Length: 278
Ligand code: MLY
Image (cartoon, rainbow, N blue to C red; front, side, top):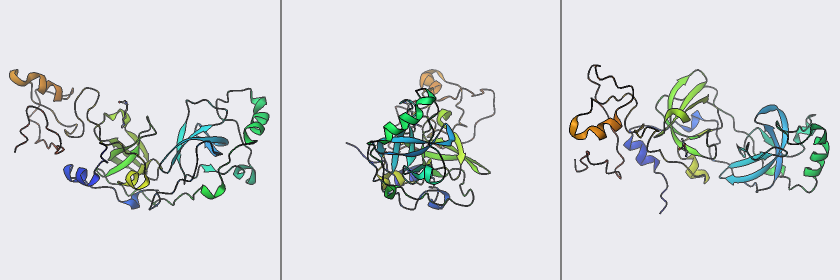
């Protein structure tokens, strides 16, 4: 049976705190989503943000839209919040003296763009102006602190919003790390990125949330055992188990490692070496 991720319990278990709402460029309550699949709208081309294109709503998750630029392929879909400043009703571009552009990688000859545009807009189900929402004002400065928890888009799997931690803060940027996943998914973004959300946002907005992962690529665990962990050299009787948790950088001639803090979910048995009765 499906059980929603319990943030309160997780924050307690990891002895961590959630980044407050005031850190984020997100509306205090997640916006309603009155869009429908197949509606058309104007969107900035993510690969060429100086051009405004026609996009179609491909699917909907909570307050987010999966968009595809008309005339593009199905390999470059992208996600936008309904209160994104990068989407508008059809007509907005022209009203502001602009001209609709073919997307980067337009699959036809550029000369066929005007006819293509006429054809896609004729009979189009246009998203009405009233369902677009104003982009929230962001904080004026970076208020994040290292260690704070948040929910963040996985840019490699952008349909996913996941359990994450602020790994570092530098000027206007934060380093987003994904709990329980190898560093390959980490990224830097501005503090006012629309891809980061306060703890509880998914639950409040009806968007699915990815709980922490279990393992990194080498089978070791990144969030229950901190990356700085270096195991002592494997000993005979438990060698295979010890080798699995030993970090590849472990220097067996180094001085003894500092004390290790390991946080377990109560629901995990922890394997044969862990006494869960203590
Ligand atoms: N099957 C993919 C999914 C990874 C998702 C990681 N996110 C949640 C940080 C993989 O294992 O690469």
